[in-house]
Image (cartoon, rainbow, N blue to C red; front, side):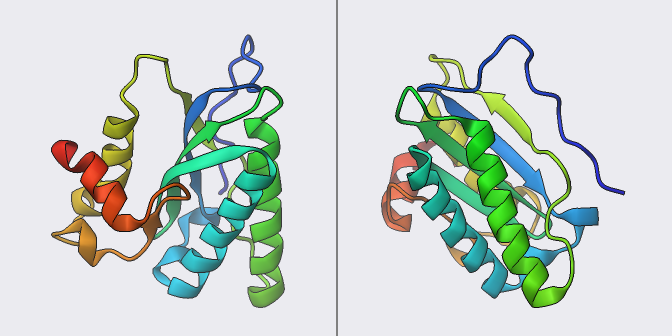
Length: 163
């Protein structure tokens, strides 16, 4: 059964310059992202939609049945709700056309980062998910993570003190 994700904060606009840690799960937690084709396609769509909605994708990590993303809005009219809706709609449509199945469960979980939260620590936590899950022993062995801002080596160097 699909969940609806966490409720949005009633007093927060979700617009403007801010950073968000977001998690979105596949429909009924199917392990869609064990297939490289889908991890690559959905990450490509994420990066394109983020650019269109004026967000930087600081880091992302596709786990078998969900994805973690650190998004940083770059403009006063950036809207995380619009970005997430556009990305999930586009990628869901692509997936359904190819497979006949639904990709995403409804909603997503978000955390609005405070100004004093260390972005590198958040990125390291996000990237360490495959390690904690026992999927690999070294993050370099895992293929389904990256960034729209840095290449993989630069990202690892930036967060290595937290891994």
